[in-house]
Amino acid sequence: MSEGQVSVSGNREAVSLLVDCDTGIDDALALAYLCSQPQVELVAVSSTPGNVAAEQVARNNLSLLELCGRPDVPVAIGARAPLRIPLVTTPETHGPQGIGYAELPEPRGKVDEVDAVELWVETVRSRPGELTAMLTAPLTNFSLALRAEPRLPELLRGVVIMGGSYYYQGNTTPTAEWNTHVDPDAAAEVFTAFSGLPEDRLPVACALETTERIELTPEHVAAFAAEAGCTEPELVLPDQPEGRRSTASNELVRHVSDMLRFYFEFHRHYGQGYVAHIHDYFAASVATGTARYRTRTATVHVETAAPKLIGTTVADFRGLWGEPPNARIVSENHPQEAFVELVRSLGGLARRLENPAV
Ligand code: RIB
Ligand code: CA
View 1 (cartoon, protein in one colour):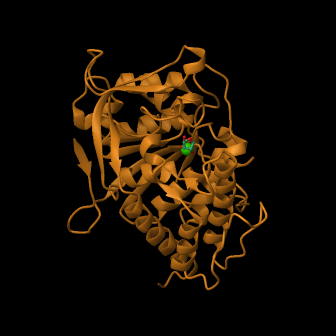
View 2 (cartoon, protein in one colour):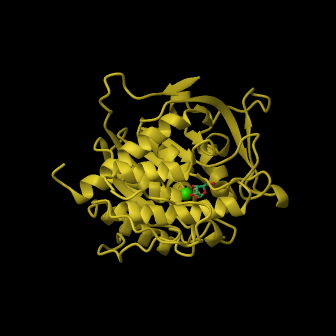
């Protein structure tokens, strides 16, 4: 069992991240969180099709990074579709633009001319052992990078994946989680690429059985706005008319609130209550080392053929298949700590963006 934890000194260790996301609401929250962490070097953000099409993902990434004061971070696009099967997006979950009701400013920056897969491979080759991959999307781009550079598992400092569901109901089919369902072949190739490596080289997998424990509520939104210095309470409530827009005095609070209202409505519509599972934020807290968690080593299989089981992930924790482990699956996390961290960090960022002197 291995456990990630905040360093005892309270000084957070520097981490250099390559991020691949399909921005979406929880990806957006994760990116904003990364921008709030001074110890994080955000090396590049690549855009994989998933929640919305790749071009929309990239636009969301550019706009959000500019909103969070990071127009310097390169944003790239690689694949426009999964490796084999057609792309399926989910406007019902994240909204037609992938950011709920938020209407982010038109980005001033442009998508990087370098293809995301080439960007990943060249960057990792140039900084062996330094970079951590944070993957909160279908694994299309990462699998293509592995094909181009099979040494990636050894060249990367670490890999954190949001995806999969282990002995827990899926959120896309009864057994499959969204990211592995959108591109099951890519997910299968990624786990296979890590097969047999030493435990500390295996990807840390944040899957639904633990990410759905990070269940954000309207109270957290109110606390975030207060931490940002908003004078009026930020009320996102189930009995308010759907689609109501925030009037918060702080711009980041306004946009995040408009994203989350859509996400709350989606979760309620699917019988999960007026809550929001912020999966990718948890993966970001693991990648930055600010979350405490435990993992269990396993051999992961991703189903790519059986029609009703496409994208289903199964973990062999006991070596019954006689195959070497290829993942470390998060088995324990701490939701309350996660929300204290999120509110304090995001609230502080929102406040600083409008009062740089603080
Ligand atoms: O199943 C949740 C995952 O799928 C998250 O990464 C969410 O953004 C979607 O991509
Ligand atoms: Ca995502």
